[in-house]
Amino acid sequence: MLAACAVAGAWAALGYGLLFSPGDAQEWGDLEAGGRFAVNIFVYLPYYAMSLAVAVVFVCGLWGKPDVLWPLAATTAGIGLFAYWVSAQYYLLPAQPQLVTSVAWCFVADAAAAVFLAVGRVGASRCG
Image 1 (cartoon, one colour):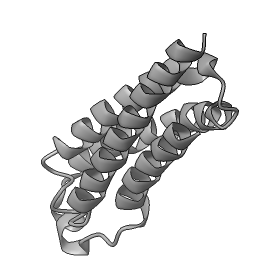
Image 2 (cartoon, rainbow, N blue to C red):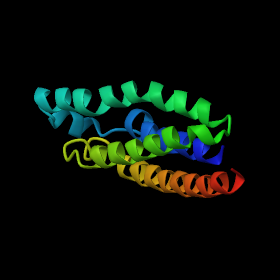
Image 3 (tube, rainbow, N blue to C red):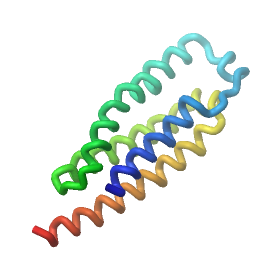
Image 4 (spheres, rainbow, N blue to C red):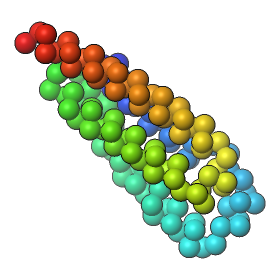
């Protein structure tokens, strides 16, 4: 259950940086139309699409059954890769200056989820 909460926390931290952190209007204005289109297609659209999958895995993870450890682990890895992808978008970081902090918190929560999953896996293997 802790792993599911950490996964949701990682996704929420990334979402806050993308959607709710204050942006720099001058930098957004300096992006040409192709740059804004690329941000929408390659960052925001995948975030919205993956949100449903993260929500389903989070709800299933709250059950606390050992069967959901692998979907939680896959989601943890996916969130880490997507957060890395977002941080690699050089044109997005000046437009969203607080995004770097949100990505850092996402990595911290994702690492915590990985630790909770490892502990849960060891506990599940000892029980049966």
